[in-house]
Image (tube, rainbow, N blue to C red; front, side, top):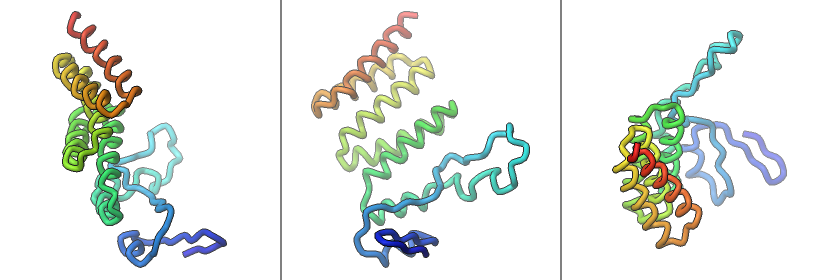
Length: 171
């Protein structure tokens, strides 16, 4: 490990190190991100070590650590973020799987703000699949939560997506 005034850096498996620590302000980790990251093919000089990240296709270690820390909300947010990453890659089925996992956790924990965000992400996915009825349904559910929690940005996003859904429906 490395230590300097106010900073200690440990190198190792955080599942083994964290239980030995007292209170701490930050845990900074390296992947896995769960996206099977790989360097693009534009850089022909990339070394073998840059071809990908070992174990990046699996998030079970990350989830185990978040559970160990009691950060169930973090797990839900991570699955939602992972879903958005898959959606950016246009891998709709993987995105939907992540959104469903995130939603299940958020619903079980009563995390309304995260549920609203996931509803909106699912609505965007439904618009990509040209299912405007389902998109509108997800938007309405998100809007209900946003009105209940006073989330004005979420309300605006729900209205934006509802507009897209109704426009898509007319076409």
